[in-house]
Image 1 (spheres, one colour):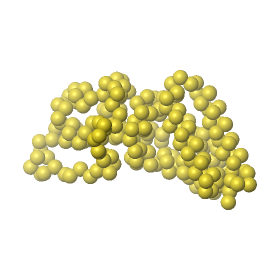
Image 2 (cartoon, helix red, strand yellow):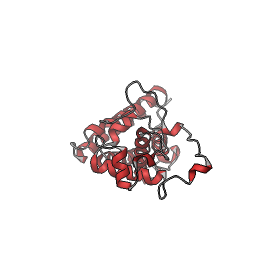
Image 3 (cartoon, helix red, strand yellow):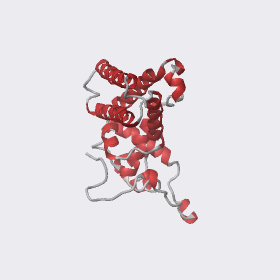
Length: 217
C-alpha cells in the first residue's frame, strides 16, 4: 500500500515546498486544460473508486486523457498529490464552528461546546467513511494543509471553551485527537450509533473534568 515516501527517503511536505515557476518559454508546452485543482479532484475520484493501493500516476493520467509525465508540470511526486487529495477531502467538513470561546461556553450557536464538538467529530467520521483512504494518509502525512489546519483550529477553539487549562487541556486535546484518528480503522465496521455513544462518553468525561476542582485554573 502506498502511504508516505519510500523508506529512507527524505521529503518535504507539499505545503512547505514552493514550486519554482516554469520558464516562460516552456509554459506554452504545458498540457492544456489541466491545473493542480483539476488533477487533485481527479485524484480524489480515483482514490474513491480504486483505493489507495491501486492509485498511480499512470492510472490518474489515463483518466484525465493525458500522459503521466504531463502531471509533473503541476506536482513533483505522487506523494505530493496524495497530500493534496487528503486536504481536499478534509475540506468536505465544511466551515468550522465559528463561535468564540465565550459564546460557545455559554451556549453560543444554540449548541454550546459539547454540541459543536459532537458535530465536528461526526463530520470527521463522515469524511473517513466516505473516503477510506483518508485514515491511512492522515497517519502518513503531517496534515498541515489549509483544511486540516482549519479543522484543528476549530477543535482548539472548542477545547478553549471548556475552560480546561494546562495538563487537563492538553489531555483533552490528545483524547479527542486520538479518538478521531483511531476511528479510521473501525469506522466502516462500527455503526454510527456506537461511534456517537463513544463520543458522548468522551465528551462527558471532558465536561466532568472541566467541572472538577483541577479542571480550570
